Image (cartoon, rainbow, N blue to C red):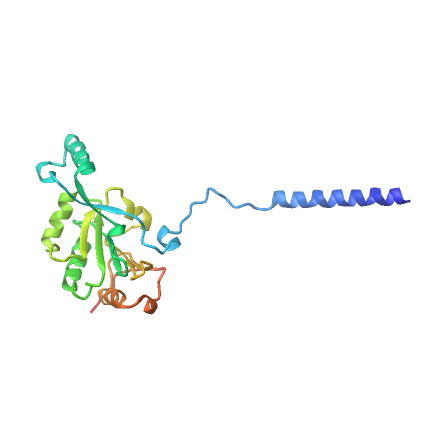
Length: 220
């Protein structure tokens, strides 16, 4: 009788284990092939590491419309050039990162608004990047007389970093970070200037971060 009881116990245990294994094997599993659609700047609130090419000695002597001269330009840029990186943004200072095109009408309008309100934005480091050629970016800077303002930097995003990192679809794209260099807000088609000024001049404790991008509004 005892042997029968032991055999029955073994059989029940085996059947239970088999049922559990079958249940686990048929349970739906996470698909590792599903793309991650959450932008990197939402996952990590810190200012990302990037670098912009500001100037290249000898650039004015080259025409950048041929393969030969583009190769020469690349060689010069690797040896004798001026760069600005995220490490150059001063600590305890808000940052405004702008991705733009020198030929974009909305970018031209946004730049006029920025220059009009530059004194109200002086607490922030304004970093503007573009994938356009450096000579076009420099012409844009000359047009809007950015040189006298040491809190305003324009350069070439050589690695096409900003569009990928922020998943940019429209110009101008603006990402705002507080004095602790933590992400606050993104604007997909230009910023509400009054709101931008308010964020820049507020303390981090006064700011409520917003994960959503905001389209341009009338600041008047």
